[in-house]
Amino acid sequence: MKAMILAAGRGERMRPLTDHTPKPLLAVNGQPLIVWHLKRLAAAGITEVVINHAWLGHKIELALGNGKQWGVQIEYSAESPALETGGGIVKALPLLSTTSFLVINGDIWCDWPLETAFEVAATMDGKANRTLDGRSGARAHGAHSSQVNTLAHLVLVNNPAHNASGDFCLNTGGLLQSEGVPKLTFSGIGIYRPELFQTLPLNESAPLAPLLRQAITQTAVRGEHYQGAWIDVGTPDRLLELSQWLKNH
Image 1 (cartoon, rainbow, N blue to C red):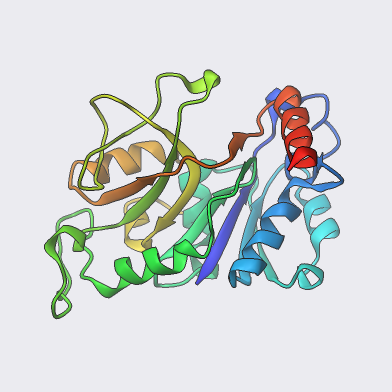
Image 2: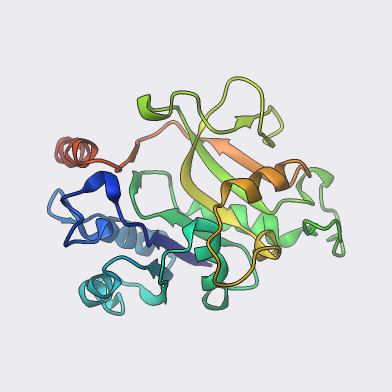
């Protein structure tokens, strides 16, 4: 399967660190944050990687090249201006595949086992997938009805202090709900079917959350609650926190 690392953000909360360095290249315990992602992807057997960029994107390409030194093959999706998460994925779709793909926010760190994505993607690709306008494909022999409509699988984590109210609910059947309690936080790691993005126009800014909430109303989004290490590296303080955590582990 292929993976996409989202790296197009300006990193306003990281200023002045990001005034001259794109956020994915900020050092964490001796190496750029995005390199941690590349190494973990390679170790999991995911070697085809797409990286989108906007702010100082040329520096990302210069630093990472084709990814060979980390055991991956990188392709780039340049944006000008940045298209937000949904718009960025739509622009990159030609570089991804017609099957499910993994997407990781470039400004997080998480030890969720990336090899799990293969099993999740196989489940999503092996069953019929209903598009957002209600069309259905042929159902695979023996497919369980609870998996038929899956267009997205999100990794959810415990709510951090900076997102105490959470994002989504996860019911006992593994389906996401927009409302209810308790809510969990979206980690920034997801596996998606290309059909999820079919309603978004090309080269236009579009957030991901409304698209997910629309799919949730059609019971098309599943998820899991991961309780391992995770941090949203959104501020200088949390960057230092992550560096310290990695030194200790």
